[in-house]
Length: 169
Image (cartoon, rainbow, N blue to C red; front, side, top):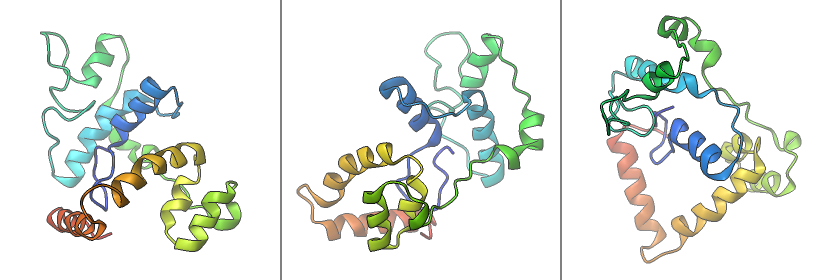
């Protein structure tokens, strides 16, 4: 949520989910009412404030007029009720958790083969939605392995960013 993660370069849940639904028509099953409260909870837990203009959950992300400026305030203006105390009380139940699929449990043979070849649990996590993950790989692989800069330099920059952000994975 909100980009807090164990590795640099991971996409924010709120922005990604909204893009999947709004731009690509991919249902995520995410109740968007909870995104702003979860963002505030992430700030409280980590002690790290989100930028004021952070996509979707930033405190002033929608501040282009005199109306409500956060998703929570927009939803409240539309008559949706979100109890922040309730969010804190139930945070264990609402925190996202995906089981890491074993090779045997993966239904997609291509991702199963990638998991077996690499041993990277990433394939077991994203194997829950193989179509979306394959589309991501088509986008990501040329960026990671292609282009003008050598792969080794890109990897060194990624590791340096991870170190600056105290990411250990």
